[in-house]
Length: 130
Image (tube, rainbow, N blue to C red; front, top):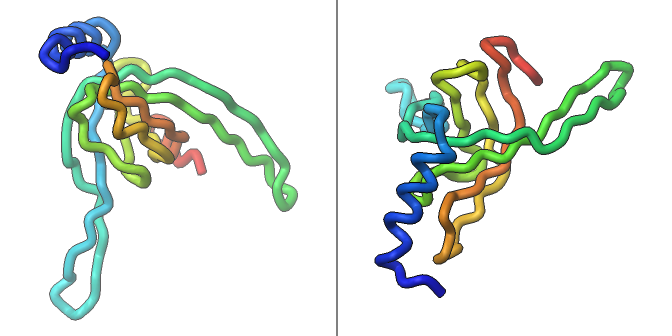
């Protein structure tokens, strides 16, 4: 096991070298609408760097409609606060405006160099992918 004090510069250098994409972490935060109801809105909770890598994709025929699915791995600094059901929005580069729905996060690894989240595409450059 690596000394925790030694991990900090390793993590910082790995983030600098591997994570070049700017992203925003979005969380669905419910709030009162002032009339006894609740509304929800995707709000930016954090801005960070990430590396986004394509994992797998497939097309299936469901109910006579062709459905596309693509799975992605998103690497971020370990101090990033991201939860399953959050969204990650890309803010620069060729994937700008693409939004990913987070399905899982690998929290709890004490020796992690980068946080690993799994997600799928919600929107692709402003066009709904669902």
